[in-house]
Image (tube, rainbow, N blue to C red; front, side, top):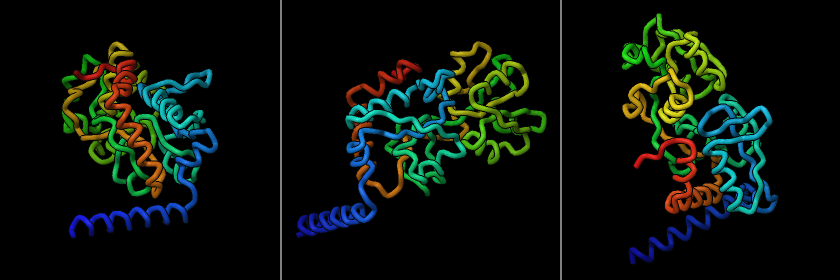
Length: 261
């Protein structure tokens, strides 16, 4: 009897979900397949996940993954340029089917959108000049009036600074040339995700990721999806699951950063 009841309840929920979806219009899944086009919001300023070159070409971990998702649907990618400030408004306005490019999971974003299943754990750490690592080991050391912080506007890095480092000086800078600010000694510390810090450490001699496995704030990466479209979320989650279990996702990671063994 309990099994029968469970089956009836599950069937009812699926029916209600289908009816709700029908009232809202076709799923993004159906639209992407029918139109042969996957619209991807991405900032193009966050290596190793998303980067737009001067010639307009995109590259990065999530750029490759976006093309893989599109291929699974028989579609082509249409890149929708956005910024960290406009990412959520652009998604809500229906300008894209998915947001990709090193997006951190937050409850504030969850209030307005769905997230895919988690890609990776990736917490906040300091990125500094190598010779000054000892000066910036803790929040207490960084949260000082003399410390100059540099962050991109509108993302979780800036939010972390406002929440935990209010005494330090904060300057906002574009996320492409921001690392040169550290090398040129125009800023002292950038708080960012460990993956970006480790990538920039490899890319730019003189910069060092401080305690990259000891996060100042726990974080996760995922893809941003329109709210209330469960059909689309389930497809993206299944595609991502298969990408991981087959090793395709790890292969893409390995092209940009070292994959933990």
